[in-house]
Image: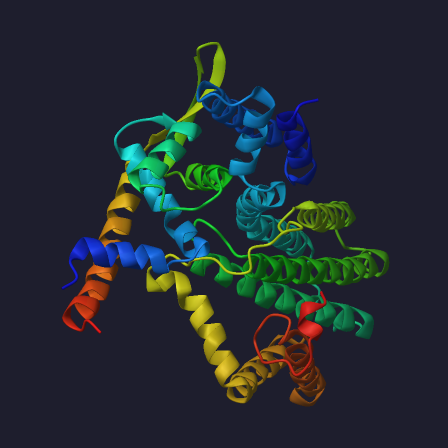
Length: 309
Length: 122
């Protein structure tokens, strides 16, 4: 085995992408190294020295692999929100199908149904917020050719939180629907069963696909140049920046809107019955902001816990 | 008195490899503006045009080429030359637009540096 083959084998082991793509890259690198070696030989160098020199001039395996992996990671980063959005839309469509297919029921929902519905709504809210955070970062770097490892870590983290929350929401709403199918004789059980199947499959597939995406390679670029982009693309990042600067005011606004909205949507007959749901929503919003704020870069963290996920 | 060429040369010298890498894509686009080329000849052009000033490993150009292609600024095709398969890169209209933007940005930057260095030589 000559020097060029050894180099190509080492590069092959460090490239993190599909086999087809890896083959294209390795062929191209081989052609380059052969060209360089031929040039050296034409200048009078012995073949073995020419090969060593061509490999040396090409760069270290680690450096070259880092460049290709970062390129692949940037591509995968743009796929992540697509997977999340498709999963979200499909789950939402399945929910709508159930809602439209069921007969109108005037009786007040049971506590179990209210609790599971509340959990699913909370989970969807978390999915939406984290999904928007990740999408904002991608939008703001849309025209940049290279995305830094730090950006990609953030996007992957936000999208994973989003899909995990969506999966939790699916479990909660599925329990709710199963309860309805068992206790309500008039319910359309076929549609319920189909919708649960679709929702669980979509959430599981989305999570599986996202966790298999190789957004981050072993070797990362910490920073990269950011290409200027129209303001509309950086709107999300601007809003995140405002929240970060004024966390208390932002949280107060969010908690108030969320609490009032929960009370409005609660399937209760009186204001007193709706109040606990409003309070629960406010507490959940405060807790969510406290726990997920540093992870999603919505507030400053006093610990390094944000880097753990 | 410093002239523009010297100022540009000094700006280049003060740049680290990482900073040069930031302009690599634009330089590759500029080379492809004169016609389609394969990786090795692009690197040769970079070396000769810069009088050997850029001390980047040759291999760093390939990820840049892949990034440009991924972003639709260039396209590649396979050709067999002298019995060996080569990947030929070609500029597309979007790449030409991007090159114009990069040129304008670089001219604005270098002329700003020139104004300061030429007007206020230490």
